[in-house]
Length: 296
Image 1 (cartoon, rainbow, N blue to C red):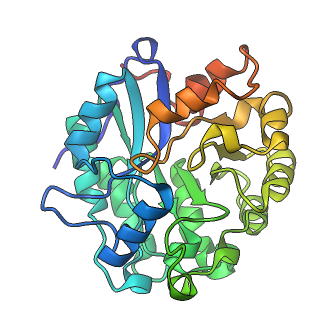
Image 2: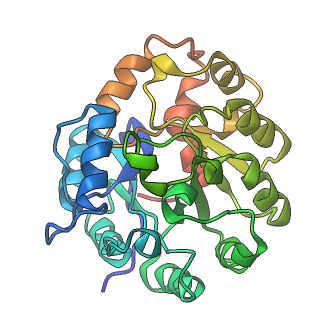
């Protein structure tokens, strides 16, 4: 086992994509049950490759980008074994010139805190990905506070899916997945109770964009990543805030492989991001958040 240590040449990369899913492991196991994977691909109109961890590294290395990589452990809610976060961290350690590992633990499991500590201590993960709708939990419930305290004490990041999701979209009853669990206002409570925990609210939080902007404006331990939507569909208020009030806490993310960084960057040319703000969004803010300044 190799513990992850970053070896990223910050000056040599053009961007850091903070939202990259590993959807297939080296054994061919998928992160989602087949029916959900098919529905999500249809929702995003994607038929492209779903590379394993080494394939993801090659893809981003070719583009001179770094990527935060993770899966989502929703075994309790789905009855489907998750891709191993340990294997993702080991893959990132093999490719530490371009990859940054986040872990994932199932908050509904009684072992979640111990597993988070193991991934931090043994594997050196830099954060954790949560998807309240997919994992089936209310992130504001105090029962999960010991998990957040573990992350806060370790100085790692908590990245939460917010807003609409393509997972379950169009399926009968949305396959039972509840969108309300991903309202960013629930994270206001998490941020208030854990003021040193750095929280990323992933995606334009449709239909709760104003709520996300309110939280980000009020709680300066919160960040917004711009993944999961083509920039040409971004709400105008999100662009306005990204250009001004929260410009130091906005992050480039694609949602690869559902949306590629190539498409995101191409579509971003249609958005009125200020030229002086873009370097922060694309790389500098993530370098500061992930404490990568001394890497490489």
